[in-house]
Image (cartoon, rainbow, N blue to C red):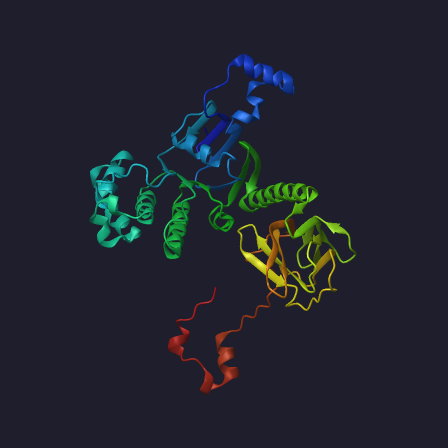
Length: 425
């Protein structure tokens, strides 16, 4: 292993459960036309993963549930052994996989820090040296000297994370641990991880929070069904992940619509995305208008049916919500079969994947006849990944302070003392 490579993974395979007899494997492979027993994808959590991570590199790992992300970290941490392949790691490794692991519920927080320090191979003096830092970081106050069995789950996670980020390690493994504590503690944890990165530690981070990954990691990989599908910048891995999820959801919804969505009051025969010429779309370019069409049958004679569409991003955040009645739609009187079209002339959605939530109601009584989450899925694409929920340009102006002072006059100027406190990013 070269001096700047901290982690090297070569041909890594991992299978859980008892292996199948070799003759059964061979029979399955012959039926499916496979040459190797390791090609049977039904039994493997990791399949032929090869990867190198260099010293001081921060690697974000993305993938759907069951893709093998946590298994990869557990193999690296030594919690589970690989079925086949080789893993090489240089230096001390600290796994933040299960923050409560190793804690003794009868000991106090302070005593547990000493216990975890001993498990990690720290001397007594080294452990005593980090104790004040852990106590300060966790903000447990008087609870730091009370038995851990009295802690809430959030307090337990704070203690585990506080130990993890204050023990000097060459390799740090983090598995979905940024959700602990309140927003202030999460931000402090993120800042500490960046400090670890800047100090030269190699960090592998698993998180479903894509914004967190983009903030912390520079490199990213995508795992799917145990295979390494993408390896590049964090942004490239995130975009590949969103595309994967979007395509999977699109197939699920298309199958659902083809099979018809039926309730006692409403039948949905189809839904599609379309452009200004009426052509069907699978994705929309950023800032370009688009429409959503729903083909539905209502089994009631409604004088004024009412509809709503909510557009949610991949994080489940409602980005736009419209109600037909509020936007001025008046129904054509009692009918059974409708083609509903909603046109969005101002598309301010950020690049990424979205799903539309649809509801049909009786405008007279506000009774909900049908509500469907994910009636259609689509992607907003652009040359670059946007930040935030909405996109759009901003006009910036940078003016020297003395010019502002001269233009506004002495009566409206800011004093010199206060101006020295102003900072501009």
